[in-house]
Length: 194
Image 1 (spheres, rainbow, N blue to C red):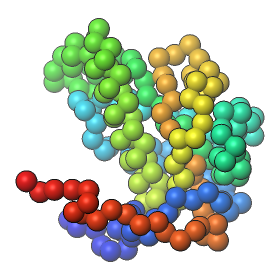
Image 2: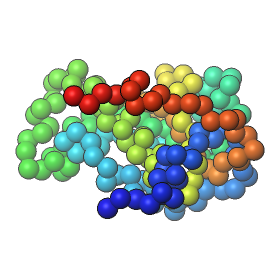
Image 3: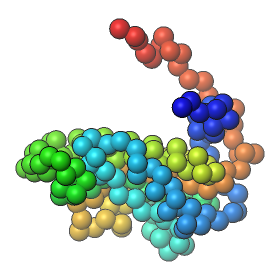
Image 4: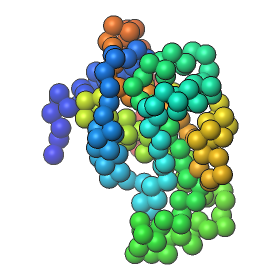
């Protein structure tokens, strides 16, 4: 079934990366709904390596702000929620549950290069799915990579096999803070059909 134009606009054509936020809270229930929608999107061998921390409280936000580059501090401080998209480098231990029809755990155990590549690639995909789910459920998103990953890992994932990937500010964007939309590459500049 093809989505209607309004839905395609919401997800892609008129959706924007927001940096200025309305002072309107995002409920925990909505964050659960976003996760429960995005979790159905595909990953390699259903590996689902993304681990997400939704940073909402003032104390958790302070810890996160200490890792931001200067240009990302205000947009993160004022966002109702910042999702830390991370990947679990021991994701394969959940494969007997997530991919029960094969011994998928054995494909990864002991192969650190494959673990790292699979975790990073699929958690990145899951972060993109999370942005689409947030947009589909009425929120705006502002993805960012301008932060110190090591600091975030120390603050939020110390003692684990989880490493931060990127951040997504979530909330209700203030359209007055948007600048004109930047162009995108044309099909012939970025793609081929062979």
